[in-house]
Length: 325
Image 1 (cartoon, rainbow, N blue to C red):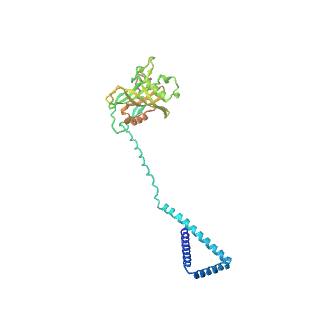
Image 2: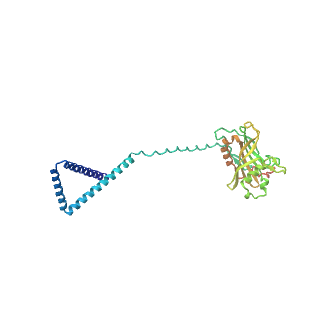
Image 3: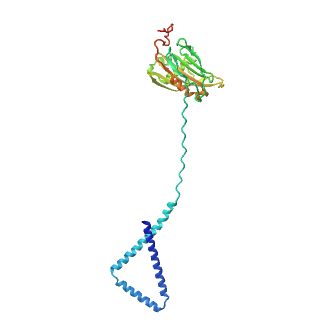
């Protein structure tokens, strides 16, 4: 509709311009004629003025409406002329360039599940666990069983006071890697505290100090291990304390420096007056490829329901082996 109105206004303006030009031309030609012609023109003009004076008011109103219509059409033509270039510019303007979307970050590959051994079960002490048979890289771990003891009293002590004793031990010479199960009474730091009030870090530090050989001037044991984290979980009515720690090691074939460190994961379970601890340890340089397998190993450690015919309570095993009936 806007385009049709603009075209009509354009036509009206052209017609008006043509009429003005023709009148100017006729006036010039009249000026160049002889005086008689001028008189005739003047006579005609006076007669025309007489005609205009004698015209009716309706004719004059009609003429005014016509002039107003011409003005309105001219204004519409000017507005259309001003608007059309802007519209054309909008249509021909190039679309703004959008920045390319950043590439999606690929999801990290899922961790490879580490193969574990069949459960190692000891019915006399009533515990079981599994150990990793390979690293997270898929390299096999060749474990060798270096120590198995059926009862607490027959196990070798870890320190001169013979409190913590090793009842099961595995070793892999590539590292070396070690896995141990130890049993012992509550450490002196916890003996006078209700087990319900034991904090996870207190349990971890107490167990590590009880198996240490370092002492200060007062004779108190000092642990050379630093506990990184510790937490407690209750599983089937038994409290398990899981912890991670770093201890000072000794030079080996892989690490010949004077000062070396070992990284370990441990779990301690409470049964009666004794603590059962399972620990997996490796040199710091082997930790990254063994951490996942060690985590699965300590999570597999459980105190099993005691068998009435086979179970022997630590410190109260008796002199005779369990009867077969």
